[in-house]
Each structure stands twice: as structure tokens, then as C-alpha cells.
Image: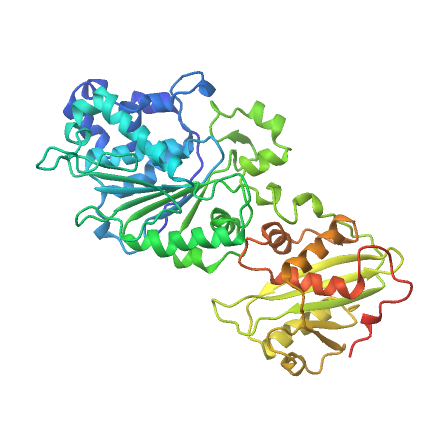
Length: 509
């Protein structure tokens, strides 16, 4: 199935409302007919209180992103049996405060339930409390919204057992007389086999499942990723899925998907599970360079222009991982200089043992050194999937041609051993191998120390390397960091003082 793209365009609410015949909306059957295929009109008609807020002066207000979310949701009118597994998996990557939870946890689920487009929604959040609060909002509408109660009475009544007790009407599950089911869980809850009778979820919502505060370790990421990919998605591989979040933590699950949108390296699971990134920048730029807000009533450009330079704005509102907090590197750690007079230069390689689609990358980093300044300059960096043989040797030769002042090649041999010397035969410069025995996080910490002391700079913006550093240790790849650290260590043995003589490591074996 072809993904539905996002075409940024201004939205005129007055024109939209003028196209609706209010006489039809005054009749229950007319309301049901008009809203059946239009989740946006459903929200305006039945849940308008959720579309007004103090931030918009309590006036009805919609973002162009909300209109696109309605277009995405409209695909759910068709039964899931019309689609292939994984066809309907969207990752909504949007600024804080854009209404992701309001739309994807309340308005769209209510529309799906009222019109019978889906019969079982399973919703997951960072914690059970957060998920239950969303379900509580949904249930309060069923209890107190007179228009919904009048037009969809069987949705608003809990299903009853023959004894008169409710089938399920609790903090984490609701079963309606209509047969509709809504289950809410924390992402760490047991979810395998979640079903009611013979029903399994046919729509899944994952809302900010990683949270935004506290420590977030690689172990936690792997645990939640495994829960999602091996526990939640297999409940029904045809189900429509919406994963919504903000890139607040580099290298986290939502950032893995956002990396695909940015055109960066991203983990294989994103494609394996067929998630499509839907990115909504708070600043929309027209072809002529004119800027506008994605939601002018909520975020006017006058406000955006006063805060757009801050890290918090870039991280929370533009989903820029380079501006987000990180356990290791931050964007401010990268300094750029192209005026350093270099006295030495080497090519550092962290090779992969295979070039299969699921294998690690081979990293190649050009590291320069200035003896007078006792400073390393990272001149270039690549990550490639090429066979560990003549193709790799050819790539190395091309780099040596591009940087003729490279005087040696250093190769990490933790994988493959000394076979790399045989692979890199006949080079015009010496080849030296090194076996790493120090834990990678310790090596990364030592390298970061050198960055922060100003002893390592970049000759230019090295997007792949810098993105990998920002995401460490949550990212699935760290080959470029390893190659950089190996090369830098040749020249900078410690973080305290410059060497008294030429670096002995320059003499290659």
C-alpha cells in the first residue's frame, strides 16, 4: 500500500465550516451520516470541548496537522481484511502540545467506536496511570456527553452479563453494549494474548510510550521495543497502529523512526515492522521561503521567533535530536575548524564481518592531528555496507586518493582478527591492527572528555557521526564512534597534557 504523504498547506476553518449544512447536523441521522466518513467533523460536532483551550482563547481551532490526521484515520473506514499486514502503521512525530493525545487517544477512537469502524482498541502509554487517565476521559464523554448518548446509545451503555453485572467497566477496560472494547495499559504491562472473548484488537494506539523524564537506559529501550514488536503488534498483525511521540530522547524508539524521515541511518526494525514516519514541523516553509506556523492560533510566529534559537524549542517543538538531552554528547560539544595545520593523518576503520542487510556497518573515519596545537581534527566519516574483501579495499584506496596526506590505516580487529591485513593488501601506506579490550562506554566517555576539553574538533558538519554520538548509548549502531575513538587514541593518549615527542603510534607495523 502506498503511504499517504503529508502535504503541508494552510487550513481555513471558516471555509470548512461553511461547507457543512447545519440543517443536516441538527438531525441525529444527519449527524451520523455526515460524520461517518469525516473524523474531523465528528470531533467538531461531538467533542468540540476538546478543541478549545485557554491557549487558543477558548475558540475552536484546528491545525493543518489535525486535518491530515483526519485523512490518515479515514483509511480505517475500510475493514482491516482489505489490507496487508503492516499496511496501517503510522508514527506521528509532532511538537509538544499539538494535540496528539487528544486526537489519537480520544477523538479518533470515539469516532471509530461510534461508527463501528473498529471494534477493539488497545491503547498503551508510558505508564498504566497515564493510559487509564486517557480511558477515563473517553468514558466520561460516554457518561456525560448528551449528544453522543443520544446518537450512539449502545456505545454509552456497558455490556451486561446475564447476572446484570458489567462485562468490563473498569479503570483499564470498557466493553460497550454495542460490542465495542477499549483496553488501556501501561507499556510495561503484560499484553500477550489480550482479547475479550474471541476478539483481538483491530486498532492499537501507542502514546509517548517512553516518557520524557528520568533516566532512560539502553536496557529500557530494548525492553519496550521488544514489548511493542514482539508483544503488542503480533496481537493482530492486520490492526491499524498509531505510534505518537516527540523526539525528546536521542536514539529512543520514536527517534529511530524519525531518523528515517531525516534521511539518516536507522535500525532495521523500523522497516521490518513497516512504520511510516509522519513528521509535522512546527515551522512550515513555502517554496518561496515564507514561513508559517503549523498551528497559528496555538503557536503564532511572533512567539516562535522569540524562542526558536533555544535548545528546548528545537528539541520539544522541532524534534531535533541534536538539541535534546543526551547521556553523552550534546550538540554544543561539536566545534568546527577548517584552519588547523595538520602534521599527521590516518584512516581509522571499524569493519563489519559481513555486508548483509541486517549486519553492522563498516565505519571509516579520517583523523588528522596537529602537533603544534596537540589537537585532533575529524575530517570525514562514512558508514557503509560493503563486502569485507576487494570492495572494502577499493573503498579504502578511493579514500587514500581523496586524502593523499593519510600516512597509515588502523583497523579494529575485535571481529575478524588479523584477516583484515590480508584483505587490505598492497595499500600504499602501512596497515596497523588494534584489539579493543576496554568497554565501549568507557572508551566513549574518554573520547567525549577530549571533545569537551576542545582537543577534538570537526572539519565540517559530519551528520552521520554526530547523530550517532548524540544518540549513544541508545542507538543500535556505534561503529563510527568506535572508529573515531580508535583513531583519536593514536594521537591523544590521555586528556591531561600533550606528549613530549612525536606519537609513537604513528609508526605502523
